[in-house]
Length: 286
Ligand SMILES: C[S@@+](CC[C@H](N)C(=O)[O-])C[C@H]1O[C@@H](n2cnc3c(N)ncnc32)[C@H](O)[C@@H]1O
Image (cartoon, rainbow, N blue to C red; front, side, top):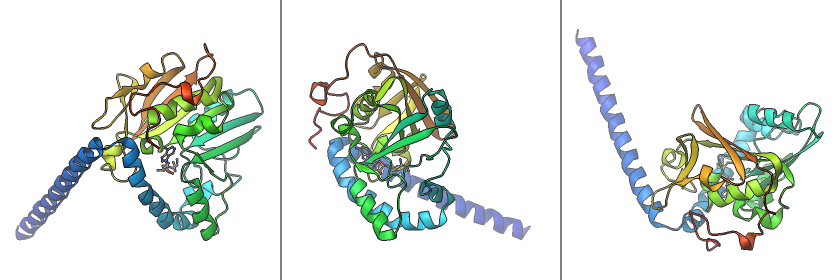
């Protein structure tokens, strides 16, 4: 009897402890959301860069040494494992398939091979130079060396209508202007080809708005919405109405969004011609 009472007391203590911790996390998230909401996205982005670099400096060498997922990332023969990517690649009639990974991190998560096809993968990330330095210092040679480029500046670096698939995983929530980045990704792919986005649901909330996490990706009434405190919610179905068919679904904790580019009614816009997006001003003060 007294042993049972002791168990109960311990359980109550543990529950109190967790409730306290949960309360602290909620309060922290609330305060961070408030502070992020008051700042311009570009400022949040600049302030978060140092943390992002420090994070990769700390974790990358050990991950490549011990984590099977990261070992695969460093393997030039690793097969494409993302099922939706495999499906999309299979739908492309040509033997050579060009793919751009936006916000790829140091080592793109994409597999490098697919039976019967040649995958030409371009990986971009604004922190590419730092990542290359970290990998050189750790003796890691990336099968796809990342190229330094912000998602917002993709059209300054790459020709519109040149890729079969533009891909982003866990990255656009880190950007200054994810709406612009998605529009750029649609501009970069050929007519009838694909943009695939994978982001954790409410990812900024989940990460308590720490570091570069400032945007949430969610599905509302079947559409991808991007939001954070202090900005209007953007319905991507509306933004992309003329340029892409949008299909969204949830896969466990992930929000997956597949965009299929419509045949162009007009030639792609040059960066100077693009209007201000809903989230931030045109040049975003970079
Ligand atoms: C959590 S990591 C994800 C890396 C990789 N996609 C993955 O799934 O492992 C987020 C990446 O987004 C990048 N990022 C930050 N701002 C960006 C921007 N404006 N445009 C494109 N990528 C950005 C960061 O540098 C970082 O490498």
